[in-house]
Structures are given as structure tokens and as C-alpha cells.
Length: 71
Image 1 (cartoon, rainbow, N blue to C red):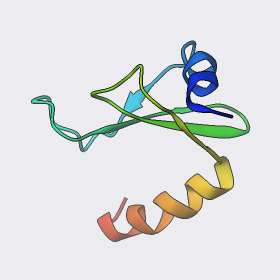
Image 2 (image 1 turned 90 degrees about the horizontal axis):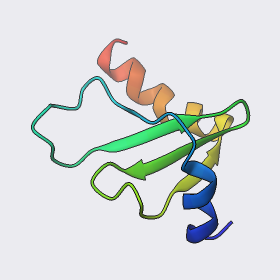
Image 3 (image 1 turned 120 degrees about the vertical axis):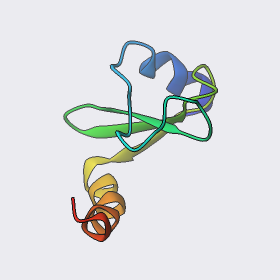
């Protein structure tokens, strides 16, 4: 899927920022999860490119980070 297709597919999703993100802006990512994939984008460029990964790949990425924080 190219960037243009990703933006179109991702436009109807519910996007969420990490609870660790501050309210003052800054460098944040947002995710939108479906039953099969997780979409990731830059919160400052919502109309920009979207990275799409499998749920297993996302779990492999955040799993170690969650255990580091004691979550």
C-alpha cells in the first residue's frame, strides 16, 4: 500500500495518542488498531503517510517497552 492509499484507508479510523503524551504537543505518534493491523502516524501530520503493521509486529514492538515501564 502506498502513502496515498494509506491515508485514504486510515481516514475513517479512531486515532489514539499514548497516555504518556503531554498536552503541549511535541513529537507524538498516534495509532489506530483494527482486528488485523495497527496504523501508525505522526500526530503533527495527520494527513501524511501512515505506517501499517500487523498486530503481532506491533505487540512485538510495544511489549518490551511496556514491561520496561512496569505497565
